[in-house]
Image 1 (cartoon, rainbow, N blue to C red):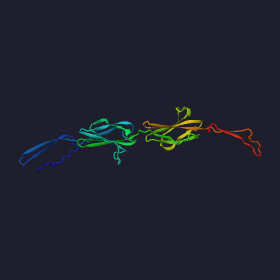
Image 2: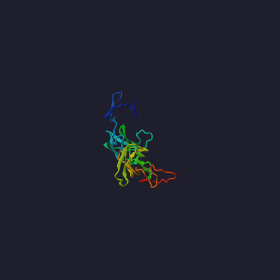
Image 3: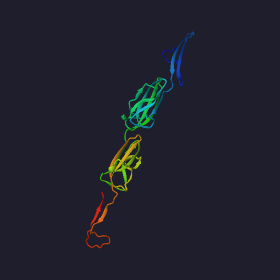
Image 4: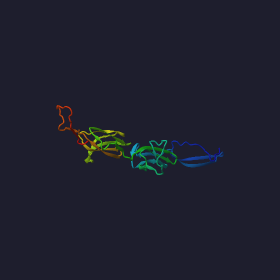
Length: 278
């Protein structure tokens, strides 16, 4: 059998790693031998990849260091991708330009990511490492980017409107990572000294935020809505409300018939109705 520039044999290297030598012996019919040694390095081990920060499903903001491992004895390169969505297999992939680096990383910064350049929402960090033998491995973590404060507003409240008794406060609180919101009030002239009405975690547009018991209050007050998300972003809105819990007073004028007075024909009834405000 004569072979020239062809396959001599197949060799299954599964389970083998490290340096070795392929030895080829050729013998002719009269006993002459030619030997050729080929030094090789067998590598069936995939690179090590890991993302330690940010952790999976972590909410992040501003600028973050992506920290992890991309290692191998015969390391070639790693590729870091930031992909929109909760899976690197999403059909509609969009994101940043992949980072390609040939530097081994061991619990080190793979990339500094400025999240202000990305939309708020879910993103996937995908890390793939390759070695010189063509082995590769990958890992990914999902993050939620939140650089925005909650959206807060009161349902249209006319400055001329008066409220009394128990008042249903309506408005909007919207945020993907809302922690809670609170409602407070203060007297008009003491706008900094707010008193807590309630706190809650409801989310929605034009919903009932809670009930405000205005009994024993009278005058112009500041009503304040403040919402907080889990990263500490907050937003507030203040409106003025007129609270009137004092009923009108009605008095008889002189000449007006009183209880049990006898009247006939036409009688003039003169009353005076007064109210401290409205």
